[in-house]
Length: 315
Image (cartoon, helix red, strand yellow):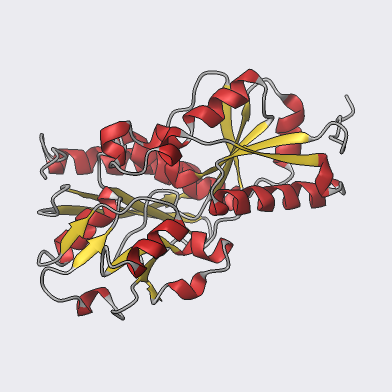
């Protein structure tokens, strides 16, 4: 069957959150699709959808439902046919998708590192005792408290622009922003430095854009296969298997990063107590094809080492 390409009169609808970063990711997806099929940008319509996570910014994610708050409304629009594909920041994605949806397309991964952002201090080690570190990420909170227990971590939600304004207003002395997001927004200069993953292991799938589709939509499947980046998919297969086996959510501080080296995949993982009192790390290698199995096995062993109650939340 001949592929029915979209046209300006009947465009392919790309669903996304409405933040500047989400729109930048949607525009990157549109540009890649337009180039792959030699189509005008007008053949692709970007549809911004406000999610619960975008509307409620005065409470921690763990208190209002976790990661699905950034995807639920977009996935509902995909299931209803209001949009044709959904574009997501992969670090926001739950490990399970609703029935009828598939997440099997990834764009080339951006910088995976966390950026240190402060209007005053050059590095995290420069902060004095009691200084406030702003973050809404339980992973970053726990990692900071493991290394710098003398610092105070405060809730710091919002998009990139909102968090930068909070810093200017003195709500905190510093924060962290993913370098991938800053790069996509053309704001890499906002970070004083990019933290090496050996110092702050990033979130699972950080820096990756994923594209979700209806399982029975053969046109979307064929079009998306033209822009899928296999190496990113291989990395995320290992990382997300690790996360799924740990039952990862916004209430569990988990970090992980897979790196490809020839035919070998190297995976590092970390689980932390939410209060920063303990961190468990591991690193393993396997053939790339065995990445998901490696992630699950590493998670199982780390859970045994952690023992019951490791992830209990302690304010």
